[in-house]
Length: 265
Ligand SMILES: Nc1ncnc2c1ncn2[C@@H]1O[C@H](COP(=O)(O)OP(=O)(O)OP(=O)(O)O)[C@@H](O)[C@H]1O
Picture 1 (cartoon, helix red, strand yellow):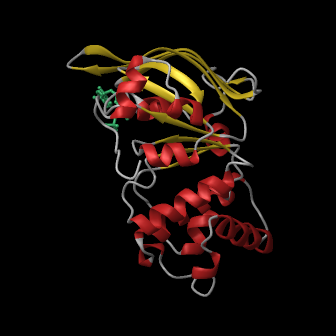
Picture 2: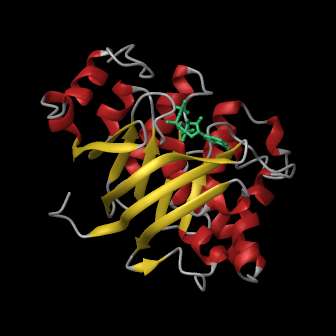
């Protein structure tokens, strides 16, 4: 990935979980660059550290006492683990969409307006424009424009996931982290989210965790393959799938080591 100006630079990253008073390494000396305005997918067998790596990019481990993070992560050259780095600002720049949609117990409008209200005091007109633009970007506007005051919980799961994406987009992040964002959805809703991510990647740096190899291949510009907490291979997606360099990558693609969903691959 060195030919691209990296948006995210991860240097000598180690993550330890404390279990029974013993620190266990989940990520081992990870150094990798993630390019700007591309879609990079982290793949690998179950338990290899995909979600752990994703969470380091917006310091989500800060809220867990049993996790120790060592190393550096730079986003746009800013050291996000510097003790003075403002975490609320980081969370604005780096949004996260989770595996299952968790809309706030509020209206559709208020779900999308939540983030912008948190970060600045905006006139109602401006806020309403942000809500509409974000819902349009998430391809949900036409379905909800006449019921913005309805509870978000009334939406289908697929619509709720697009609402969560709209909520993330509303604060204008630079980076969008997506953790298995289609795994709880039916195939049609999953395809809608995939199409959305594909269209958004021109303007956002998207980092996806996926165990669906067909999805990773269809959407990704780059692949980071993790195995047992280590980066095994980082390559352009098409090259990775056609001609994996590492034996472990080959085995994973062929289904010889577990965790991948090879259906429709
Ligand atoms: N809170 C925790 N406490 C202790 N160990 C943890 C914790 N969270 C994750 N781990 C361990 O860290 C390792 C990496 O977990 P992680 O969830 O990042 O893997 P993953 O690749 O995302 O897995 P999956 O594909 O199954 O979701 C695993 O061995 C897991 O058991």
